[in-house]
Every structure is written in structure tokens, then in C-alpha cells.
Amino acid sequence: MQSRLDKSPVATWWWTIDRWFLAAFLSLMGLGIILSFAASPAVAERIGLDSFHFATRQVIFTIPALIVMLAVSFLEARQIRRMSLVMLCIMLVLMVAVLYVGVEVKGARRWVSLAGLSIQPSEFLKPAFVVICAWLFAEHRRQPDIPGNLFALLLLVLVVSLLVAQPDLGQTMLVTGTWGVMFFMAGLPWLWIMALGVIGASGLFAAYSVFPHVALRIDKFLTGEGDTFQVDMGREALINGSWFGVGPGEGTVKRIVPDAHTDFVFSVAGEEFGLIMCFFIMSIFAFIVLRGLNIALKEHDDFTRYAVGGLVTVFGLQSAINMCVNLQLMPAKGMTLPFISYGGSSQIAIAVSMGMVLALTRKRPEKRKQMGFVLSQRAIPAE
Image 1: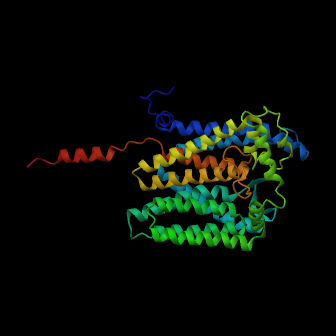
Image 2: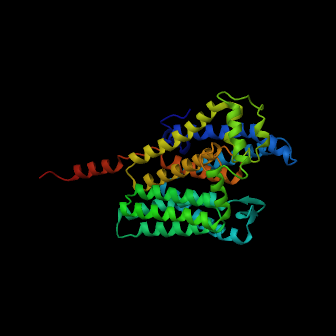
Image 3: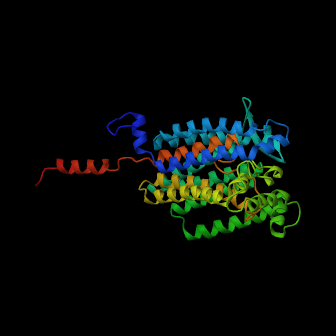
């Protein structure tokens, strides 16, 4: 245990970090490893790999993710902004490159191979995009003559254009929704709200009209007709588990769910550990989002308020989309469950994002300016 008198960086970090956030993130990482051992063996055996191939890799991915999250949490707000600007520029370049040299999977180009590693640039783009937009909104609020809101809008258009070109409409909705929440926090006028609502509805209609796979998924969801095997099996797994589950390793429906270790790991949790586990997982995500928004609401610094609000919003929306798909509450969409679904890029990217949350919510003295003001007042001689 670190002493409060210890002024070393580690001790300072320990006494200023939000331990509730830290405990929640570590809990999700631990659940990710446990559920990987429950969900992935059947998938690995089905494609001819060692039973614990994905589970072992999940553990391997979690270790650097934990290191990255803790390392980022040591940074100051200014360093977070600089890191985000560099990361945003690099990921924008990779987003363009992925359109030409990316690996095509199921008709979409979202992955690029670097030094033998497959990277999904859009995953790393999200936290950088949120932080830079938060900075732009904050600068406009601090000095209205700075067109920060306009630059944030142009950045959104650029990012959305690159995502649609892949195409990745799920990430497009995620980024756009988060940007809207941040703009609302920054004092979005009602006229803008109505205009953006019309643009959003038009975008959904355009996606339905232009992209056949989007129309197919929406039609399947609305009519229940067509190939709904995967979502049906996900729901069946949840039903099979009932309240208390069939027991670790005893699930049967999970063996025929194609993406049990990624998109439908929530269903596997329900089958083997019951709906009680599902509610527990949902409560952790809800706690992170509500605590983040509550801290953002009380924060006096505009940049920190928008950044924390945006980061927990994109985290919460992503988890909500994944769980809603598992529960058949929305059309099927390949979206990972943060920290729990299998995946290297998503694990590291989410670790970066939540490391930023830990860094920006650390307890910092807010009385320095007040103390300086008091001392300056004392220095003024009485008349």
C-alpha cells in the first residue's frame, strides 16, 4: 500500500485514480477471459484449431491491453490531446490505405496488415476522434470567434465518409451518435438538433436504399423471414440458460453459434451462467456510463467534460448495440462487446479509450487558482 506522504508518480497515481472505474474495467477484462474459455473452444474446433486457441490469444491480448490502459492513465490532459491528435492523423491515413490495400472480409475492407499484425484503424480512430472533437467544442466555447464547432463538423464528415466507403455502417452510427451527444453537451441549439435529426433519418433511409446487406438485415428484423439462424441461436442460448445457466462448459446451443466468441459472447454468458450473469454484465456497463456522465456533469473544465462524456458514450453505445443484437432488439450488426469479445484491435483500442477516461477523471487540485487569487489579494495593501 502506497503512503499518502509518498510523492512518487505511482503513489500519486494511486491516490488520484478513480478506483471505481479501475475496478469496473478490470472486472470486464476478467469476465472476457472467463467467457472466452466458455465460448471459444467450440468455434476453434469447428474450424480445425486447438480448442483453446482463441482463449489463449484472449489472455495474450488482455496483458498488453492492461498495460496500455494503465500507461495512458498516467497522462495529463494536455498529453491526452497531443496523443489523440497524432493517433487521429495516423488512423486517418490508415483508413484511406485500407480502402486500397485492406483485407476484404464479407465484402468490406476494414483491416490492414502491418508488420504481420492485423489492425482495424476505425477502432483506434474512435477515441482520438472523440478527444479532438471535445477539444474543438471546448475551444469554441472558450472563444466563440474560433470556429471549433465547424471544424468538429468537418471532421465528422471526413470520418463518416471513410467509414461508409469501407463500408462500416455500424461504426458510422456509433461515431455519429457520440458526436451528437457531445455537441448537445456543448450547448447544441434546438435548430441544430432538428436539422441533425432530419439528416440522420435521411442517412438511414439512404443506407437502406443503397446497401443491399443493410436492407436485408432490416427486413429480416422486421419480418422475421430469411436467414436469421445466428440471431435465433443467440436468443435460444439465452432461453436455454434461464436464470442460473446450465453450468460452465455445459452449454449446447453455443456449439452451433457461428460467432460465439465475438458478437454473441453475451448469449454464451446467458446460457452457461444464466440471466443473472447477463444482468451483472449489463450493470457494470451501466455503472461505467452513468458514473462517467455524472463526473462529466460536475466537471468545470469544458474539455474534460466533453471528452469524458464522449468516451463513456461511445463505450456504452457499443455495448448496448452488441447486447441488443443478442436479445433481438435490433437488426444484426457485427459489434464487439467491449473488453469481453475476442479481438486484439478492439481490446487495445478500448484500453486506450478507457485509459483516457482514467487519466481525465483523476483527482487534481482545483484550489490552486483560488489559492493564487487569495494570495494575490493578500499582497494588495489595504487603503
